[in-house]
Length: 232
Image 1: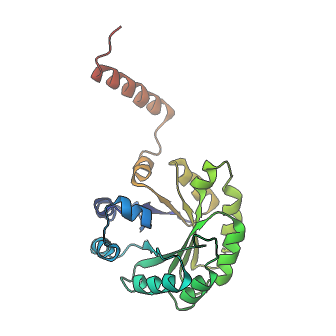
Image 2: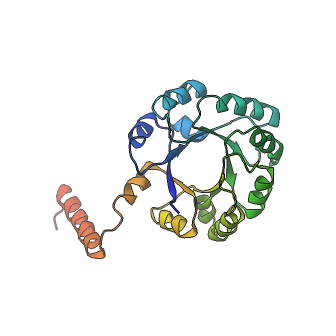
Image 3: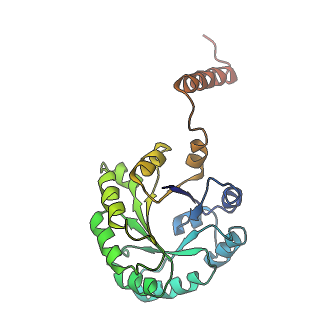
């Protein structure tokens, strides 16, 4: 099974570039990435992106914090384009599970990307709320988990097994930290991995021999010493 690569960015020029690359199968954004990219008007900026990203799946996240407004935003985002997934956080800022929101939207056939997931318990709760006929993504934050000394692999193994019989539900490896995470995701049979542009570019150099890596490294040190005009 192919592990699809999604580019994690809201930068217009980045999406324009990677939208034309076959290595990238889709895109993920969030309010933080939108802010970094300079978006002032959420809808207008999203529409600007959608003018270039017309076919590959792209996730836009709600930013409301209560269920009613979250649903209102989700319904609006859903009609922006056919390739849009509506991103819903598993809980709001008060820690309240957004199950009712997920259940209502999924039952109406709205494609969802459930985000900020850190435990198999959360995966289970989300899974129960999803309409199995509706396309859905469950995003597990592997990198942030590992940053805090927690092993994400057991959660992925159980989650991938959990959804194995349901072709419309995909597990996504989120918050990628290094290129090798792509190998790990593939070995697990993870459906999708989302990664920043820098790491996607690193994947294109996969396959270099250890000898070539050594030469590249030493040449890099030599070039930098020359540029700095070091003398002893």
